[in-house]
Image (cartoon, rainbow, N blue to C red; front, side, top):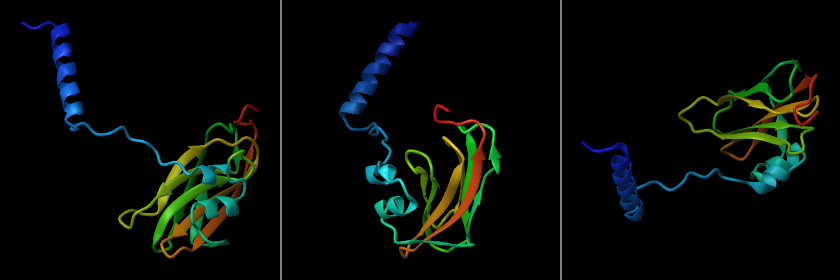
Length: 152
């Protein structure tokens, strides 16, 4: 009967051989667009992501509370009925980095996302849809925060 220590030793050897042979996947790394995260306004973020001038649209919707009790976890969502949406983004106007989230969308899924964002203070939140033809549409909602999420 093998001991636990022996089994773990053999497993480590097998994993080492698989890694040396290139049979293990490389570590997953998130794509990082530094210019987009440094953008302070919607126009700067959209330009850094390769989009054109944004235009307000009724085909893009944003969901979220009117008043968030805790700015550290504010539930927001974005969706669009426009055809050809390739990216949905959530931007918080008064955060140090306006870009809060970016989602790449394929034609096989509905253009609808939801997440939680951190808000340092009451601010406008934008849902931005980037289309395959380069057009950019957005919707805006003001969310009031009673307790700041960025150390406030």
